[in-house]
Image (tube, rainbow, N blue to C red; front, side, top):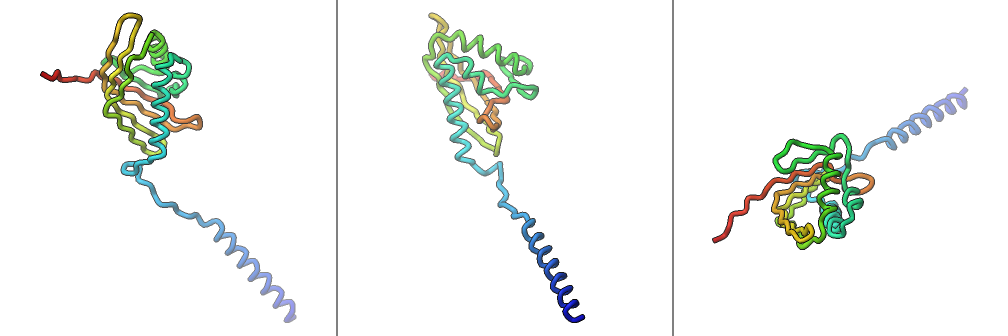
Length: 173
């Protein structure tokens, strides 16, 4: 009887300790919380800058398919430009293919006062454009305030929103 009681106690303690070990294995380790507002995310900033530079290079090269590949067109894509009502991905793609596809030379592709703000998997890029684009013999100078909103995807950073507004430049005397 004593052997039977000892065996039962060993089994009960064995189950108890096994159960405790399983509970310990399921304990979640809490990671330090990252503040998306104040954290700079320097690696992501570098990735977004690289994407922005690749966008510029696709325009310089006249590679419209490459340019379009940086966009995440879908029902959430939006664009504001020229004071017109918001449009979506279909209109944006048609406009960019027509406009940038007609450029015969990129004389200058300046992005003054460039700021890249990353909020985890979302990045906001703002700058003042100083674009000088040739359309045949005609030079077009584009000075806009531009905001580009990127989202990190499995295929890299993709544009999901564009906003272009005229930049009021005061003439220096």
